[in-house]
Image (cartoon, rainbow, N blue to C red; front, side):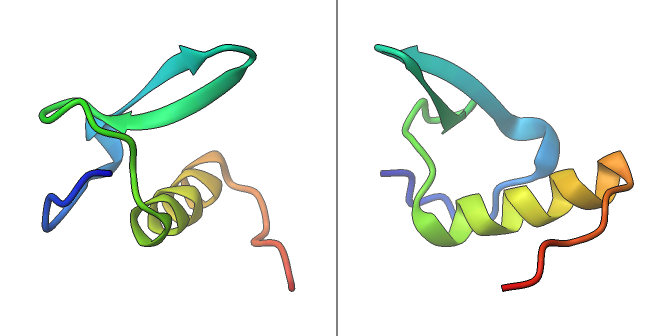
Length: 55
């Protein structure tokens, strides 16, 4: 898991692991932890112009 203090939108890359695309940090190469992924997902939805999903 990535322990970098701050992950920016443009620093995320996707790698294939079997049939799954795993979001990884470009600088360290580790997969994102849950907090980093949720922040990335919010930024991605905002960037694409979709409404945020309501839980």
